[in-house]
Image (cartoon, rainbow, N blue to C red; front, top):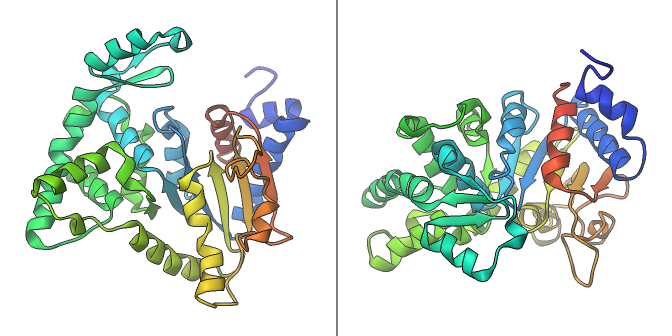
Length: 325
């Protein structure tokens, strides 16, 4: 080993000010929260699965460093797309130079671009579609109903995707989550690719919409989970990016307190947000943590951290710290 024998050592030596220091403070706060018996929710916005966050997040899940995840439908499915079609992905490092015609050409060739990475429609979307449709149809026929992530867990655990694996499965956070049966909340699942596909089957009359449990049912499930798990040190909130993945679950606390009138409900007991969103007029994703006090989400004394930086860089470093790498 060289001068810096570990990521922790490197961070401790070099990251002493500004966003770098905030990142270290947030990592230490996360670690302290767990050591004192707290539980942690991680929320995933953006395209973190396509950014291959699974390389670090899967190990966090395996080691019990996260107790529940809230994520967009895109992050749910894109981890599996990366799992089964990684070799077919295409990088476009010069994506800033693309013309509208260049983008159209990508569309016609079946490439769906996420910044500098193109997801291949045939190998990624369609491979998942035929297997997940069977699970949806079987449930519909038998009158069963499940959450979006539960269907994906069933697909993973059945082994039908193993024939397609193109990355080491230890780098898939969805496999790690399925093996642990980790609770997942997926607000707004309908706007994902799989959500659109499900809607198309409903429009065709092939499947009933009620075969898929809804966002309201996710919230009622989360309300029970939160009340069952918020004793003692409580539940922390680690938010990667902004958007509905974070906005939806953080509201469970004021909902329980104000609408259910459960006045003994604890606030979130740790909060960190990694975001480069600006604090502009009405921007919730860019709002500083203190604004959440006025909405009954965080306490005055809740440890609060905000790292105004790129989550694809920051999150793996914080996870490496927590995993003592």
